[in-house]
Each structure stands twice: as C-alpha cells, then as structure tokens.
Amino acid sequence: KGKRAFVAGVADDNGFGWAIAKSLAAAGAEILVGTWVPALNIFETSLQRGKFDESRKLPDGSLMEITKIYPLDAVFDNPDDVPEDIKTNRRYAGSTNWTVREVAESVKRDFGSIDILVHSLANGPEVSKPLLETSRNGYLAALSASSYSYVSLLKHFLPFMNPGGSSISLTHVASERIIPGYGGGMNSAKAALESDTRVLAFEAGRKHKIRVNTISAGPLRSRAAKAIGFIDTMIEYSLANAPLQKELTADEVGNTAAFLASPLASAITGAVVFVDNGLNAMGVGV
Ligand code: NAI
Image: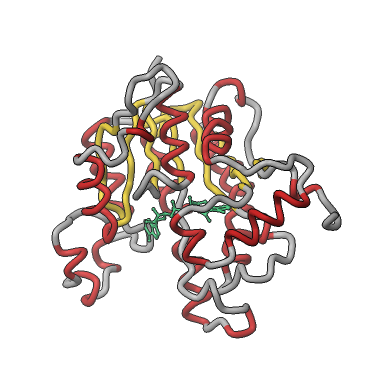
C-alpha cells in the first residue's frame, strides 16, 4: 500500500533530497518535503512556474507531485529556541511553525502518520576553513545543523511513524578519511551522524520497529557542494581513481534510498551504505 515520506532538505532540483523524493515517488510513495525557510519562497515560486517540470518527470512519464511543502529550520527545536534576530528576519517573517517540533506537529495533524523520514541537509558556516582555524561557534553550528538536526527530526517524527518504517540520512566519507577542504568541523559532524545512525537504529528499532540507515554519497555538484568550493576537484578525483569511472548521479543515491526504505531492505539497519562508485574502497589514487 502507498507509503508516505517526509523529505527534509529539498530547495531545488539539483540535490540528493530532490532525487530521493523522485525515487520514492516513482515507487509509489506520497511525498511531503521540508524546505529551509530562507529558500522556501524561491523553491515554491520555481515549482509553480514549471521551472522543475523537466526534472519532475518519473520513469512512467508522469510528474512527481509534492503533496505539501513545510517550511523548516532544523537548527531550532521549539519557538523558544529562536533568537530575536531570526524571528524578525525578513526571510523568516513570512513563515510560521517551522521549528522541528512544530513541523512534526503539523505533519501529524495533516496526515496522521508517515512511513519514511529522509534527512538530506547539512550546513557548516566555516566549511571552507581548515579545522585548525575553525572557531568553537562554527564547529558547534556544523554539528547543530548537520548532526543534531537529525536526532531532533527523528525524535519528533518517530512517535507517529508506522512500524516497519525507515529513516535515511546522507553522510560523507570525510567522517573516517582525511578529505582536505571539508573543513569547519563538517568531518566531525558526519562522524557524529554515522555514530548516531547506529545508536538511533537500536533505540528506534527496539521502541518503534523503525530502521535507521545513512548513505555515504560520492561527490555531486549540488548547491551545497558548490558552496564548499572544491566539488569539481572531488568529481575529477573520483573519475580518475574510483573502481567505477563514471560521474555519480543523484538518481543513483535516490534509488538506493528507495531500496533502503522498501521491504527489500527489511533486515538492514544501523548501516552506512556507500553509494560512491566504490571510491571509499581505494587505498591510494592510481
Ligand atoms: P543541497 O543543497 O541540495 O541540500 C542541502 C539542503 O539543506 C538545502 O536544501 C538547504 O536549504 C538545506 N538546509 C541547510 N540548512 C538547513 C537548516 N538549518 N534547516 C533545514 N534545511 C537546511 O545539497 P546536497 O549536496 O544534496 O546535500 C544533501 C546531503 O547530502 C547533505 O547532508 C550533504 O552533506 C550530503 N552529501 C553531499 C555530497 C555532495 O557531494 N553533494 C556528498 C556526500 C554527502
């Protein structure tokens, strides 16, 4: 029967979140998305104007429907956590109920339950700085936006996730291997996300029969990745050195997410699944 998915971290048609939503939609799921508040306006406008129609195309020729878009800022759990300068910010003032708890409450009120929760978001304000030059605030902000945001989302959505459901996040090999340029504490944020995937798999599995996995993706020229600055170098490096010498598409990650969310993966939980053309398995560049 049709499943319902909430995909957090979709604000254009270039990133992993969009591709995951598409793969889930192609498999018959109903799609709800959470879009970062400052990006909401342009995303909704572009969608309405048909700017994404070409990339909304599913394999059967129909267009992916997004049932509802929720404004979300996953750095805040409750309205009480939101500082004054954000509250009064022009880009936030037009939206309401966008803290994690409020979004979860809204989804529960609107739809009753979900089956699939996807976390496809990250932010590290000092990502372009080496770790030795990263400030405490920058480091903690990276963990807040990229790691705790997932703990918080799962914590708030879990009570109304149907047993047998599945949760997925996106991680990066910089958690366990040195990737110069992936700075600002983002390596630590991904290490936390992967460790939490195991602990959350235990807790959510025992308590709610929900599976928790993370996909360690290879390089993709998304908006977030372009902001980091060395994405083209990473793509070239992968092309030159990975076992599979082809560029990774977002759809390949989307399809893996659809598999992980499906009954085909009913015994897979607590796993870090590499979708990177095998690059992580290499010991040296060749
Ligand atoms: P993206 O730009 O499509 O997605 C990141 C999203 O996070 C954006 O939509 C942005 O608006 C949202 N966001 C940022 N801060 C937020 C907040 N506080 N609350 C709510 N949303 C927020 O880029 P991409 O690359 O698809 O990123 C998705 C995930 O994939 C991230 O976890 C990223 O670290 C991961 N990843 C990306 C790789 C790449 O090469 N692009 C490689 C491996 C992992």
